Length: 164
Length: 368
Image 1 (cartoon, each protein chain N blue to C red):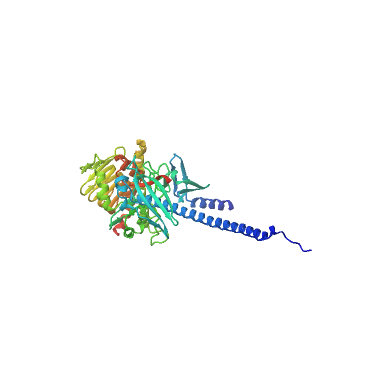
Image 2: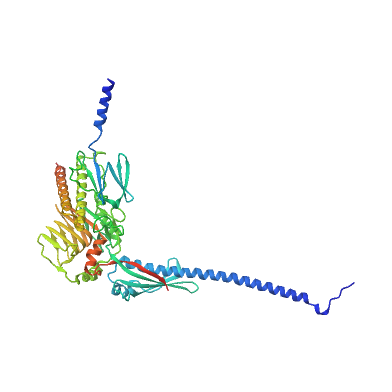
């Protein structure tokens, strides 16, 4: 009986964990790569929080910060890029601390739009540098996928925009 | 027994006393003279230092003045116009009417376009006078903001959230320029225009304009006036060889490349609805409307209104935009990113190095 309760408790604990919580991949200028649960910026440095602690990275070393959506593996995700100057989260909507569904969609659409802007900037840099064609095409594909994500979000937002 | 003194010794005490008093008097005078001299030396030293500091102030003041407005060439723009640009009259140090400086200018014999010298004479009480001579050089093209609005009255409209105006100084190859100077996202020449521009941004748009000073990065910023842009800078640019005037817009247009920049001039309104890329300097005499896909590296000067109204496309500018008015109604995406490297290497050096206003830096310093 006691063992059964313990097993049930373990299942509840493990099940209530959030394995699909978003995390971040930080790509460095020198080709390095850091994965983190949380990323923040302060004083010209990036701080990446991991289970083992926090890592401090000079901003100049960072090439891109990619947020991976919950439930997706990093190698499957068409990564958008989040610039260190990413927009601050919008204030919660009138629906309370979690915001209304429309506010959440608008905020996501806004963030994707910002990723697109930064992505185009990085693409321009890559073209100026003369990066390999494969790299250019990869960036263009990422932008294309971001564009599709944005369109999907806009379609979901459409009923609210129309006032339905 | 009464002792009698000899006749020869009579009065000796008086003489000795007088001698001693004379010596003491001399010592006193010497001491007072020494003290007075020390005070005078100290005073002269102090006034000399004041004069030197005043002269150095004159050097820095003149250099800062030139750096703020930007200089294309020193000889005919600065040295010839020194009397109106800065003047040779004596100026008093703030709060010290008796400490003054005056500055004169001279061309550099070997490089009159890109170098000059200034000589500052500092004066202080008691006739103190010191002179300092400094060499100035051009220090690279700049823009007072990623977007610069030099007009007296500006009209700005921002719709949607799909735009980013960034005054941080980026390298051509990407990343922030560690040797660069960050600028406002939107720089305005007239400080009275800060409020109208900021007021045209709603709460969710404030972090779409970033750069010097945080967000919204809308700041007064020293730079060329509208009349100077129209009457001096643009004519100077258009006088360069190889200007392409009113090219036909096909839909897949190329207005120069980073490897081969181009000066492109549209004499009327221009609308870019398709795809376009460019590098160098783009001058539009009236209005510019971008509704398609466009990327540009360098400087865009629009004497009318710049409208970016991309519905699905993207507009990316690396360098700067100087415009009279600005309307961003972006459903697609638009980004303007400041880059002094783009301005200097692509838009300035590519055309001889003396077409865009540059900052001014000191390169030598000596006391005369």
